[in-house]
Image (cartoon, rainbow, N blue to C red):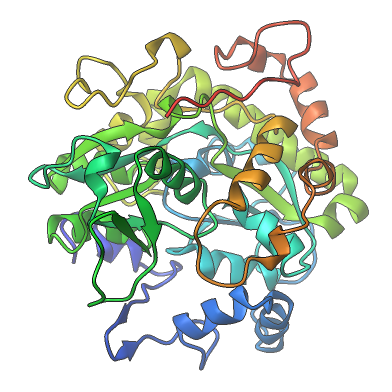
Length: 426
C-alpha cells in the first residue's frame, strides 16, 4: 500500500485498478488486450468512436435507462457530482443514482464514457474539445464543475522559487488536454522556458522543461521519490503533497487566471436531445450541490473524505486543507497568492460556463505542446466551439431554481451575471 495516497483504497472493489508504463513493460487495460499506451495512441489518432465500439462489443456498456451513473477521478473537481449523490439531491429530483465509480486516470474515464458506461462525468475542460472535434464524439459540456482548485507544487529541496527555475526540470501534468498543461505552459513561456516532451533518458536542455503525463494519485509518491521535480494538478493531491511528500506550493492556478474553469460537467448529446426532462433534473441536483458546497466547504470536505462517505481515499484533514486553506501568510515564501484582492477561494463552485473562457481555451490550445496530432485545432473557430460544444439551457434553468448562486463572491458583479471578462496575470 502507498502510504501517501492509500493505494489499497484506490484498488478497492468497484474502483478502477492502476496502470503503469515503465521501461520495457506496459500493463494491460480494461480493453482486454490493449495496453495503456496503445489505448492512448488510438485516442490521439482519432479512434475514440472505434474504442467505444470495442468496449461496447465487450459488453462493458450499461443499458440506456434513467439511472444516473457517475464516473469520476478522486479529486475535488468532482465535488458537485459526489455531493449531489451523498446528500441525496438526485433523489430529491426523483432520480435513482448509482454510487459513483472512482476511476484513476483520464484516459480510462474517457474510454468508459465513450462506451456509455457513465452518463454523467467531469472532464478537464480541453478534453471535450478534443473529443468532439478530433474524435467526432458527441459530448456536451453542461456546466463548469468548479473554478480554481489546482496548483503547482515543487519539491522542498529542488531549489525552485519561480517558473524560470523549472529549466532543466521534470514536471508532471495530469493529461495533455488539461487546463493544467495550458496554464503551466503559459507561465513557462513568459519565463522564457521551452516546454518539451522527451522520453526517459533523453537530455533536457538548459532552457527546457520536460513534461510527462501522470495520474493524479501517482504524483505525490513520484515527487517524494524525486522521480519528478514538480507537478501541477487538482486538489487534494497538492494538499496531500504538502502534508506527506515534502511538497511546497509554488503558485495557485486560480491566482494566475482569475476563477478559471478546470473540470466541466459533461453528458452525452443524445441525452440532452432525447431526455430533456431527465437532463434538467440531473442539472438541478448538480447546481444545488454547487450552491451548498460554496457555503459549506468544510462540511462537504469531510463528506467527500474517507472519514465521511469515502468518495476520496484521503483523510478529512487533507480534503479540508484542499478546499479551505488559502491565505497569504501561509503561502508567503514563495508568494503562491499574489492577487488576494481577487477574493478567490482555494476552490470555488460557480458552475455557469462562461463563453469567454471557452474562447480563450480554444485559442490557448493552439499554443500548447501536447503529444499526438493537433491538426484539428488549426481551423477551429473559438466562437463556434463556445456555441456548439456547450449547452447552457439546463444550467440556466437550474440557476434560476437555486438563486443563491449569485451570493458566490466569484460571480461577476453587474447587470448580467452570464458574461464576464477573463483576467490572466501570470
